[in-house]
Amino acid sequence: MRTAAAQQGPLSGVKVVEFAALGPAPFCGMLLADMGADVVLVQRASTSPDPLELGAHAIVHRGKRALALNLKDPDDHATALALVAQSDILIEGLRPGVMERLGLGPEACLAAQPALVYGRMTGWGQSGPLAQHAGHDLNYAALSGAAWWSATPHSAPLPPPTLVGDLGGGALYLAMGVLAALLHARSSGQGQVVDAAIVDGSANLLNLLLSLHSAGLQPEARGSGLLDGPWWYGLYRCADAQWLSVAAVEPHFRAELLKALDLSEDPVLRDAHRPSQWPTARAHLAQILSSQTREHWLALLQARGAHDACCTPLLAPSAAAAHPHLQARGTYVEHQGVLQAAAAPRFEHTPSRALADIPQYDQHGAQIRAELQAQRRL
Image 1 (cartoon, rainbow, N blue to C red):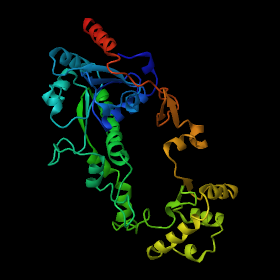
Image 2: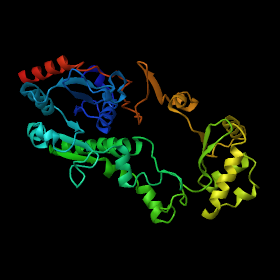
Image 3: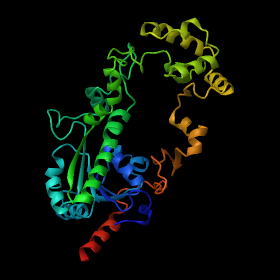
C-alpha cells in the first residue's frame, strides 16, 4: 500500500485511512502524512464536491492519496472495509453515529482489523448532552473556557480563528491520541477507539493558565492577570499603523527593554508593578510607541543589541514568510502556487517528507483499488 513518496519520515510504513470531513480531522491527517504515513483519503462520491473542501487549495490534504467511494453502495462499502482491514489508523470527523449508520463504526472496523486505532474527531465528543449538537471552533473554545482570556477588559473575547479549538484542541490531540494508541496496538495487538473532542482538548490547553490562576497570578477578571494586564505584555500601534508585540514578562527582560528605549528612568513605567498602575502605564507606553514607526523601534532595539527585550512585529502570514528568521528555517514555502507552512516538528534522523502535492478528486482511485485487489490474491 505504500508509494515511493511515503518512504520518508518517522511514520513511514504506517497506513492511515481518513474518511473525508471538514475541520480538524483532515488537519490531523495532514500531520500524519507530513511525517511519512500513507494516508488514503476516502472522498464522497459526488459529481459536485463540497466547495469547502477547497480542491487544489486544500493544504490539509497534501501528501494524501485520494479515493472516491459511495459508502452506501455495497461494492464501494466492501472496498472501504477492505481498506480499513489493511490500515493501522482510521480517522473520521463525522457527527456521532454517522459512521455506525454507514456500517463502518468501531465494531465493524475492529472486527475487520482487531489492532486498528479508530480515531474520532468531534466538537462535543461521542457522549454528553451536546454530543448531537452542531458547533464550530468559537463555540467549543467559548464553552470550554479557552477563549476567556483572549480579550481586554472592555472588548469581546475572540481567539484566533480555528487555532485554539479546531486545531490546537482538536487536530493535535487527535494526532497525539492515535499515535499513543498505535504504540499500544503494536505491543499488544489490541486496537481501540480514541474519542478526541475539541471541547476537551481546548480545556486541556488551559492547564498552564489554570496553574497561574490557582497561584493568584491570572485572575478571571480580565486585565488583571500576568498575561493580559501588565503594560509589558501586549500589542502596541505605531505611527505607521503597524503593530509591535511586547512580551517582556521577566524583570531582567523588562529592564533591557526600558534601557533600549531610553525609558529606564521614566517615572510612569519604572515603578508600575501593581495592577492598579497598569492601565496608566499601558496608555503611557502606547503614546510613546505611537510617536514613531515600527521600523524605527525595531531598528533602535537592533542597534542597541536588545535581543532579550522580547519585542517582535505583528506580521501577516505573507509578511511572516519573508522574515529573515523564518526564511532561514524554511518555515513557509510556496508549492504549486499555494503558500503553506512546512512540516513541523523537525526530526534529526527521520526528516518529514518534502512538500507533497494536494491530490485531485479520486486521483488515486484506480491505483488503490488495484492494490487492494492484489492483496486479496495473496
